[in-house]
Length: 390
Image 1 (cartoon, helix red, strand yellow):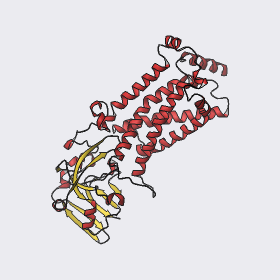
Image 2 (tube, one colour):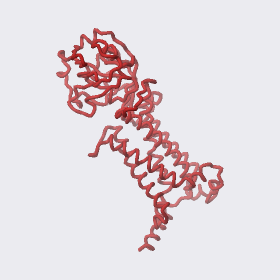
Image 3 (cartoon, rainbow, N blue to C red):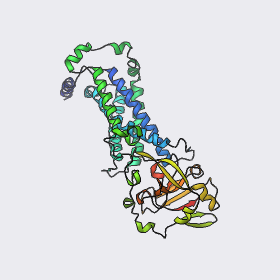
Image 4 (cartoon, rainbow, N blue to C red):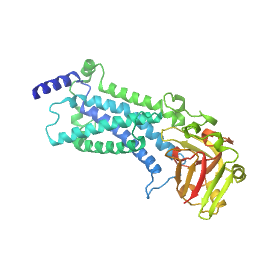
């Protein structure tokens, strides 16, 4: 039986063999893939910490576009990793058909790291891509699963690099002796396979660049003209700004925001209510701030309303106060949001009443919503009902 499996695996490896494959090619692809994963992991971790802050968390409010940049990079590098991962798998595929699968403890670690890394990466990239389209054909919670899978990927990648470090080191440079040893001259390789290693790398580079260029326009304005396949486009939606969660999805109706709507602000001294005309009578401030969502899209817009520090001063609360903001949403993970003092005291943090000089559309959070610099879109609470000074 063992001999039979050995022969079958050897036959399969021979079938899928290609002179284009080499250790040098695998190392190059690994560098690109590793870089994309590390950028994706770091920016994703930043987003996670903003939404689930530990006690030591530092909240950057400058530059204003910091979350716009980091989350755009997160989704963009995640998309770029898809063709790179497929190319990396192609470059090592015949090696996975060896029999027996391992002959030493080192090979056990190598195969285990590959199995965990590949399986976790495929699930992570597939679900992340579907999340950008807000499609969830699964029963598990996306955000928590996405977060912990990222740690599994980074851990298995670190183990794989540690095991393969001698090989990586020998083939890291194009001028290293091992990398210069070719199984066949370049012309012969091209003749036998129809493509050279250089052409293969060029194809992968072009493919990766293509998927990035045609999707990153939802995050980066200068790429908007070629934003063909991303789920969001700039300057669309009510008042020219995309909407991620509509009033209908949040179960907020025009009846909920009628003329009897008031904002309640609770402090240790008591509760005070503000009607919409009273809020409009307060000093108004406007700023261009980006709304940036975890799905990767973002857009800057002109927001106008009452500074939170002015609102807190009106109720006798310190400007540097932690706040709990409650929405009129009937349910949802972000119906209640905690705003740390670093935002409430910031000059640019607004209780927004207008967008582009007009009252907010219901889908944008009428009659009032939060806009603070450097925060994820899910924390820019819409349809604000009450504030509590903590």
